[in-house]
Length: 123
Image (tube, rainbow, N blue to C red; front, side, top):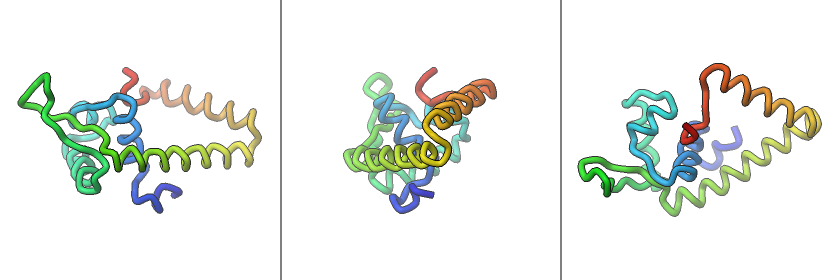
């Protein structure tokens, strides 16, 4: 997997991407958005915190809660993740042609939606 040399797993990359899009979110919200158990999200959060890729802060709207956001290190890593994702897109396009690659992307998006999937942060 192309993300392994960056020290991140695909699902972790998606969480970083979601935090980039939404700005900040609670661990509970992220678990719901990704369809993860609280325990799985807690483990992932701990690893991302330990790696310095995200930060945890008190939610100013609800002082008993915490929110997660990207750290500067996480933002820098996300740039590298986006480069790898674009390289994967180019590889697919080179293998099957740009028109087929675009059609494939559209079909997989439709299939994901038909099966109840969504992009975290878009609901």
